[in-house]
Image (cartoon, rainbow, N blue to C red; front, side, top):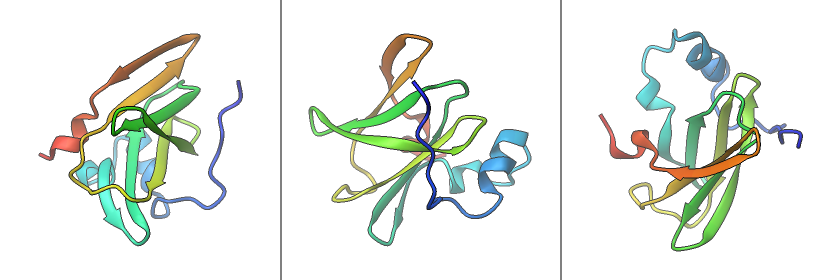
Length: 107
């Protein structure tokens, strides 16, 4: 399944590339949940993932979209508080699993 890319780009210019290169000065400023106009931006890195979905409130699902071909995914989640609990569901190479987003907990 092809990965869905984001034509609108939610991240600042160069942020995703810097994350993938390991040169971003403050990954906590980009990864995880961050309040922005219109909701909460959630960003995660999963190289080679086909999809990354945010799962909250039991079974509510929000698809994150590809921001960088290296595997940076992001989504604007409306109606969610920045400190709300959620899990990430990742699909890669035919496998699907859920896990906590470590960046949800802060530094």
